[in-house]
Amino acid sequence: MIEVVGCLHAAVIVSNLDESIEFYSHILGLKRVDRLLDYPGAWYQIGDFQIHLIEDVNYQNNKIDLTKSTRNPHIALEIQDLDVAKQQLLAANCVVKMSSSGRPALFTQDPDGNTIELTCLHPSQ
Image (cartoon, rainbow, N blue to C red):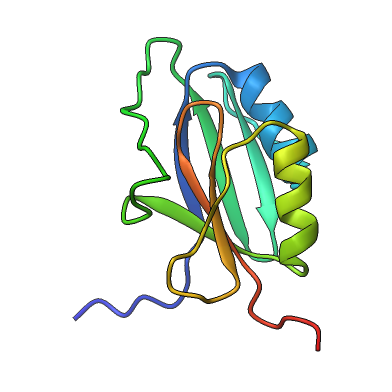
């Protein structure tokens, strides 16, 4: 049996790299890191994990209506403060859907409709 010992990165296809960089860098506040590849993209470091944005100008995602369901492919990120995240996303005109499970989590989407879950594992008392 294969013994998986970690998760290195997730690749996310985007249609407009500049719009996606705005979302991942400025709205989510992720740290962009160098990449040495010759096709359009951007990499972000989160602890030992990376998100790799790969641009395909012809990409068309079937955007999911988050108001109806959050049961779809997504990347889950841990955050410190759910209320701060929610306010920043709403201020940036991003869709926000609170988790229907009652746990401290929300779902949003990048400009291409890729779903991002933001979860606060250790809410302040």
